[in-house]
Length: 422
Image 1 (tube, one colour):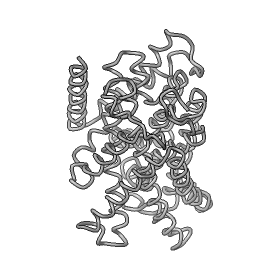
Image 2 (tube, one colour; image 1 turned 60 degrees about the horizontal axis):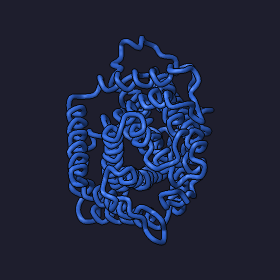
Image 3 (cartoon, helix red, strand yellow; image 1 turned 30 degrees about the vertical axis):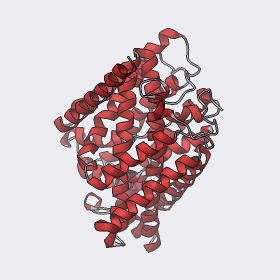
């Protein structure tokens, strides 16, 4: 058990499953068509290249995570590097990402199932489905971290099986001669698809958040961060190769993996991809429930929120207040429809987290050597910072304004809490 009373029951494999589960969400089943429509055959190289950029950012999380054993992830790193206020803002933005993402993804699940059961597209049936799913995941999280990890692990395997079959059965059917780019990359708009790919790879920032419930987190976090990007990078790149090489009219497809599987596997292949998409979406919901509540608990543990937010269940030793509040807010956003407008916040919120972590790596090095140190001195953290700033420059005005509003709200809450303590 950790010093905070949390049970250390997660292993490095549990953290890896959490990371893979969050990155390989619903986007991997839609991405091939969206990116191909803008980049053509260059989309394969774009997916692989953005995977390398994601590895630079993940390595920053790995080094910073190897210094700490507590809950909070990036918020904990930035707090120790730049002070309480900066750490709170990063932790707040992490929580914003998780709650808005959960609200968006659970609606996406309802839309997917609505293809087969149209009554789920609107009305009381949709409300009942969303409410039941969120409350069920809330109950599982309250019951224990081990139970939550079992569900995440099962859903991760459940999504990797159809994706692996899609790749293995599809590669022999790829028309390899058609994959070579036939035009200059400069003839395509680059910023929009690259920005989309960066966030398609997003989600690995959740890996270090439950470190306070992890066995040997200083070793487990770096292991899980690196393996998460390796696995997801291979899956996403090879899925793009199969899609481009087997599906004519890929750019117009609404369900590219299912449409491609229909051609080289048959009807059961399309059904398998639909099941995989459903499991992926459900898995993302579970991961958001687990990591989002730990974000809130971490802020309370650091003293930046009232201790009430960090209260643990006396039997299960889970942060029950943080779990309930995160779940109910996500449910409110999902049912009210405001998730659509708030989802734009997540783009800039994630960038704030990435920038803070990369900068924290450089600052924390002045305090001594970490258990895991990125080779090459400052090169990788500086590249990660440059990439994040360039992505931010390519964000829309609405995204930047939404992110600024979220930061201001966080600052107001921080100073209100500070005034309350005085």
